[in-house]
Image 1 (spheres, rainbow, N blue to C red):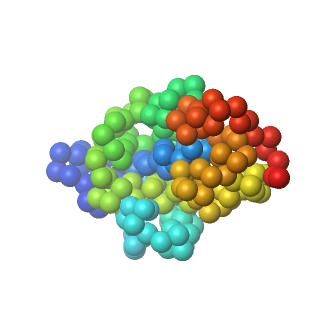
Image 2: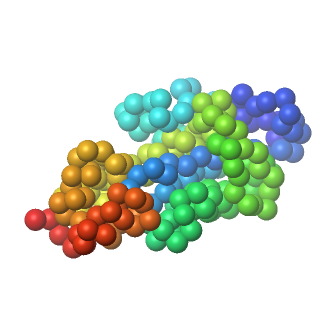
Length: 213
């Protein structure tokens, strides 16, 4: 397959047999919930308009593009690493784990993974890290959108279980609202205990029950 991803750099392989997937994550910074990753192999015969870094797209635009990516890509997969894995491994290694899981879940086996950022997970296939790749390489942009929309949906589901934290509004990030609710209700089972604001609450003796007041 000739490079299926517009925006590739000259040093990348350009072989008719190369199968390239883009990989990106969502949710490294939040205080709660899993970290997600997605891997996407685009179909050069079915280009998708509007792909770019998910952070530069509105929620509505991401929600429109996600099903198009799933319908038109040659292959896609979404994976995650849990809060427990984040606390056990650290957020960087948990992110690498989620990325590897996403690549390994692809129904079409790629020969090369293009990873957003400056580090690559350890995998059986070749990988190349591209800083800012989510806005330079369309396959990574597509992965960024799938990871972000999947994680946002997961946090809306967590909101149903723990409505007192307002996960549907801040998606687990350390906003003023989230920090206030964290101090009020303590840490829930889905908070990342290795993250400083959660550690501070736990040190103060506030342990959430998971029940709204």
